Image (cartoon, rainbow, N blue to C red):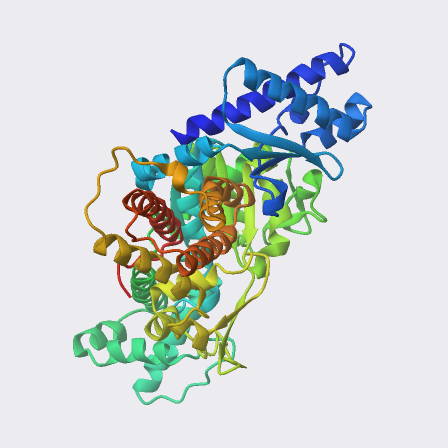
Length: 564
């Protein structure tokens, strides 16, 4: 219902822009990208209207007319079309600043909004706008060399929430974990467990500093040593078989831990993609052969190089070393080739900050394989620091001195963990206050939002059963009521912003703002009163707020409790 109102408003705007352009462009065709910029957005300040459009400033230089004059012409045509078609969507319009068109909506629009939310419930805000077909979202993809760190946990929270948001705006999203189950780190893992196993046998071992030091390595070794039958098998293995066994054993054991951690965190994957299986399939050689056939592979100094500078990289990259071994880049090229071969139109990778320099070479690779560089986006999620009592918690993955995701969940819970990891933009470092995350007060952002939902649930449960027939939503005229309705209007736009920016951060800000608007309304107005008609209207309003709070929290992977 409300989606139709949005479409009608946007249609009026675009037709008004087209009409102004046809008159003012002296017969010259206006570029499509300028016309496509005729979109409606939520202004940052509520005094600037309910919706805003900046198209006049984009058209100004093309039409060689001041943006304020362009805006005035668009508004004149917009109001003419609205009158002609009997549209009662707009209360009034204004021009502000350099040529912003600010639109103030009619009460009818807000009444339709409340009806849409109450009728559509979880479907409200979901749309096919912006959908670009099948999208592969790869995230976490941590090496199976230890339990998940806080950095991985933040990536997991971002990836899962983003997948939910992208699905809501029309993408067909596949969640994928790329399992790095071979390579140097896996060799070091296997060697680390083997050396601890030797210690269990009473041997003196020189344990290298670059090997994995955590207690979990000793625990894995002890599990083998304490099994007499397994001990006998290991003692009978050749060195080559033994090395392979310890790598496989460590990978499987740690992946079982990682899978459980992610499950406890509410994060699931559609596909677990093995690097080892990729290599065994012959797809790595296939990718190199394709690049060679296209002229992007050459040999120099005994190594094989990828001519990535042809696509803007700062230097060419080795794909096969002089000893015949592949570099890290080589299977990654094959992996991304395979992603496209599986029919995905768009790829989104979530990586840690240590991979920032890796982006140009991967962009070069997909272009060399014949794909548009815009077909792949990379999100760099900055690190997070845990604070306890105002003091940073020391962490070192290699030394095993870090708080695992499991330990974090035991301390603060899933809801706080997920919400807190999303409260900063992905490109910003995040300070995670453990004490704040455990507080059950309004200081705690996730508690504040969840409490608004629980508070509304309590009101609705205590209210008499009321019929919606004859519902008079025109009674909702108080400033706090209008503020709540405008906040509800923002939800679909917020989802689109999150999808466009590939960052669910804005949704945490929105939910806190909506909760604040509700608490402010509730503190100043009685929902349940002797005025039956007003009570019914306010119940309808707060039920809409409850629905949107629940929808937004679900997008973030956070529960919406009925009572607290």
